[in-house]
Length: 402
Image (cartoon, rainbow, N blue to C red; front, side, top):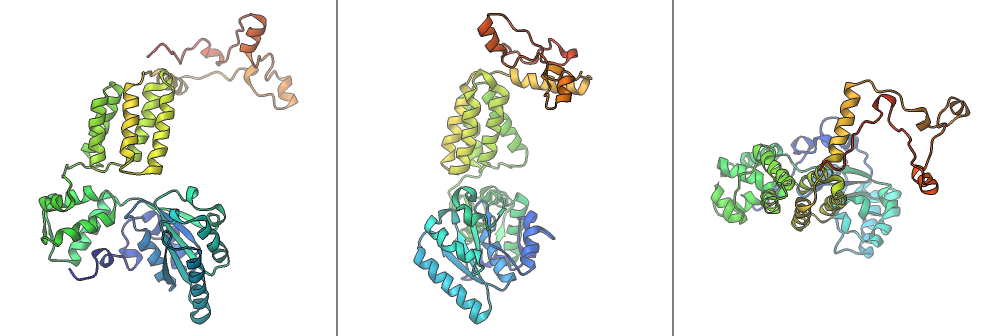
């Protein structure tokens, strides 16, 4: 290893060297075409850590031969904004060169800073590229955001992480990575290229032959061997859901802990609980869907590791909640009937009489809009059919069916 940090050594110099984000920078994809055209507008890169946001911003500057100026959203103030703008104007005049202002963690950008940059983004003095792990719609002021395109980036796949590892080994031939250690490294990285690079860099400081034991020592993390796209992934989420269904909070927490420990996507876990809340709990405890949906939103906003508490709270709530599959069975039967039988037209009295002609044809005729109110006022039971003629009396929803 030389004195240049490994992350810097592996930074891509062109699009062909860039790993991941094919939906944006693959052949003929939108962001690549925009950058290769030599004329780019301000944009935000939104994605998890280690997915290539900074590398992509640097590539953009390189392709259009612009000056790349990083800016700290944390340690800089409005006075620094003026200095950056002054330098950008000077480059345009003296060198005819654009300035790409790169703001990492733009979600930590103060409103005053954003307001100060706005006119200079608008008049083209600077091209602003922001990088964020948070939803920019919540963090960036609308006048600025409306002048910027948002591009969503995703974690590296296991295959893409493996490509990165192979490239590191090819560049640094003294490093030997054992097979189990490779699997551990991919599991540990969880789609974060920076984590994979740093783990290798720390390991080779001790030994150029990287074993599972060495990685466990360096990372202070036990290798579990969980393939997030393979059998373990599906078996664990299956056990988790079945434990929820069986009302066993202890088992639920065990399988949740397994998934958290290996870096399973917390949004994936939360999404499955939202589905479960409707499918298996339903109207027996309607607040379950509210809790599960709030959980998914909270996990998105908070991130890990704190989200493990939110997931655990929600999972134990769902496990101990009353259960009902009445709504689930009802919609399944209604859909099945539509597929297997010819259903009569909607009754005329339920149709919308939006024109005088339709009204004459009987649309909406004799329809009682608020039958419950009429019953209350008259004391008489109102009988009004709502299903098509050949489904009259059909029961789809049976609340007693728990």
